[in-house]
Length: 342
Image (cartoon, rainbow, N blue to C red; front, side, top):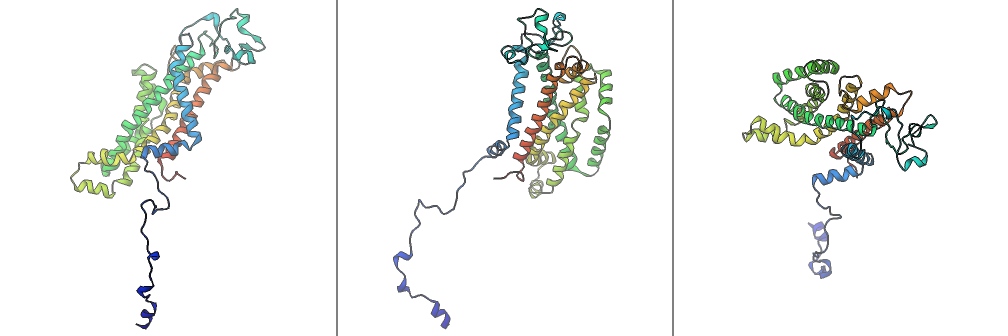
């Protein structure tokens, strides 16, 4: 008791200066943060990845050129002019710099053939067809295959993986064994068999992707469902009487959709390469139609004589695949909270 009395401060020692009101303009926190939406937060982190931004810009440029390129060249992609065959690249204005001036092996091929006012920006092939038009026409096919691959991944692969992982048990075992059987069939065998029923080209490639192209996405979706299906909010939905498919597509799918979008972006380069490979070996796009793979195949035959015939299509294909990889990497870092810094 004596110690308490000693520590007590007499009331008459307090003054008005010892107390003050908190003013309205004073901040009680060290720092305030403005509220941002999820998409805005993703975009802010995506912009910090310079490689992803560059990849997105290149993708936009390639898409634009694929749309308008065949229309601005003044030539048709299947127009054969035998008098203009095997002409090297020649671009007006730039030819004055000593590049793309129509010179091959030390001589101007255009002047030798009497085409002083003729220009082919990417040159011509062995049939006299304009390579600029054919390259961008072929890029359309690659982009179409990529777009279809994303739809198949999200539509078939995601649904298959969600259902398999959520129900589990015998359903999961049967669905996974079926997917493994399909995955064990070589792509070349699938395309060859489909070629007996369907015309070789875009239809056979699309059906090939529908048969085997979605398996990787289904495995990712299944793994994500296995982590989330025992969560508290899923248990609460079951308790409230929600149906299984309502839980799958309304509760689980929105929480993993970002991850699935990322994986679908990574599948785009694989689909483009698959189309190019099949066209290169003669099982894809057939002449006179063009794709990047068929153009590379045709240019490979004249590689030692006219290397420009293969360089343009290879460059566009490489840029397209590299850009989608960079873009997908940036999307992954932007959606993944563990990758975000600063």
